[in-house]
Length: 439
Image (cartoon, rainbow, N blue to C red; front, side, top):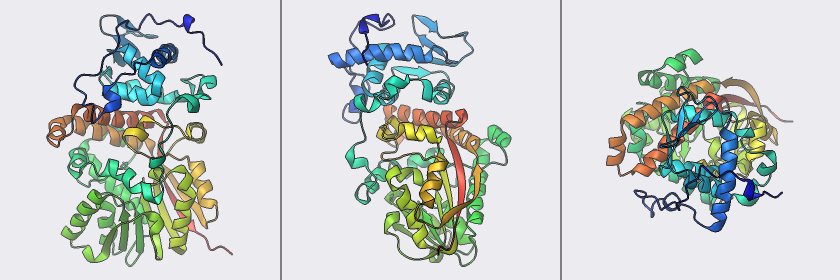
């Protein structure tokens, strides 16, 4: 495929060469501070600019350039505005690294929005159609691939986890509720979720945890394995039921705080928390619960994950898993794509589809799905509450040593995720598996 660049409309691009971004620490954020400037970047930027104009032409957003007005289908002032202050830098970043560049441009302050979720939601809803199919097939040839050291092998996984979960317990406490639960809450209904305040979130988290424990049949004397400790709320609630809990994590920060919470509640004799990879667990358990951990497993290890659960569960045991999911066709289309979320938020991660989870669980295991609950709208509400709380506490985040680039990154991460759930591109599900006795 060839593209005649003489036909590209670049009248919206600035003629001045984009500069290194002031106010961005080049040591901490090298790819955000530096605007691509090679001849290849200029060519790719021209192509990306044309594709971006085509992709956004019929989106329900307004593209605004200070000093040059607003341009968009129906750009009537009522639609959320994407405000681009450096279109040349944005185009070059997208042309050089795709959606990674789109995110880095936001981190650099080259574009912003008066309603960030409102701008991102139409992109998420039409993500399969934003780039022509002929160019999508070239993605692997022109965009960065996954670094080898982010594969979720036993040797790499701990460092992948640490890059996110070991940032700072105090950082997460800034925006999480009193339960310190970093996953979707479960509200009474979609309507209740849409109207929820931050004061409602802790109860929604407890309802979510209790439903998982109920689904797994956790009660007095249950030998429970929790894969992914978080900050200990599930440990506390399971132990309070009389279960013997073995929880594992690869985050030293989470383990330390979770154990302090367990001891403070007087439940230390019922709980054990180990810094351990799930593949290295030994023993027999009546139940397994895992909340939004499988997203960090990596697609090549999904079968291993379920085979491990199958190995550890007694016959008749149950596993209750909460997972963020995406449509199966999008999962297949994006397989192998290195994204902004991989680079800056969750290295080595991969969102599964429900179809992929069922297939992985059925392959050489006795695990079969007995129950399924979908509540993606509740995650959109949870993320909105986290983002509001984070924004209200920016000074506290700065006092913890996180700079403005980090705060823009985190704001984009939360808004990007919320938009995914609001558009229906993402969902969250609780899946209950029973272990059948195999002949």
